[in-house]
Image (cartoon, rainbow, N blue to C red; front, side, top):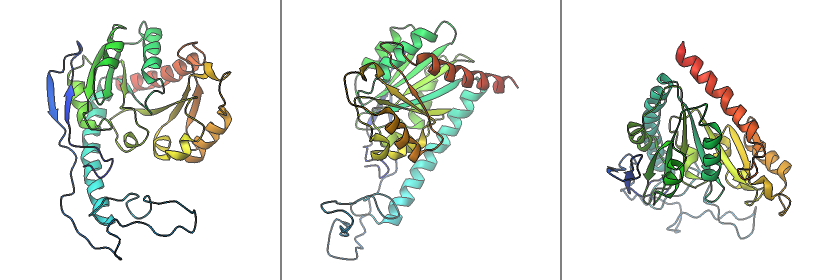
Length: 298
């Protein structure tokens, strides 16, 4: 089990643009803790934090050097393994980023919890922008090619990456997917990550920006509950704003919480159904895409 995110060493299947899972890759880039040191300061075999003075009824496993607990491993050991995993991932991410930059391709890594509306927003975005941008997509899910099929129905190339028990895409998976795409120079690449607000925060895929997608049906406190993903993102898209008339959701408070975590994060309100706010999102995309094209042309 990966000490960074808890995902298994599952087989990864990368489907082609027609939806066949014909390329199988073992996800062996995670390193795993197999030794079992048992150096605890007391008799608790699980290393629980017993200081509950700050909050009655709270078990806090997020303290300490590693910011997590792994049974049988010291905090120092967890930190070392995490550094090894992320260093290897970052090397693959650097390769992906260099490859995309040489081709003048602007890449976004879309992250959210399941059901936030990433795929629906992506389908609407593709249909609205495909006349002026070449667009390609990498879809990440644990199972099925449903989302990639929805994307291909718009007429653009899409690779489905199934992670099995894995809870996020990593740069090695994305590199394999890039090998299966046409990679048209000067285009847009959307990477739709596995639905998860935790694990994708730690993994650079070689993208230009992470974009966190948060729907109004999820609650205002998500940036405080899952701060790492908001800290890692450059843009927050608040989706399904057409529902604001029917639910209680404080937009201003959500943005305030996100900026407590990440003062530089931008925020846009959008609806894939009504089209509200999409012009501002497309302008955000256009400005950054043009900058990538200009740099590639230097």
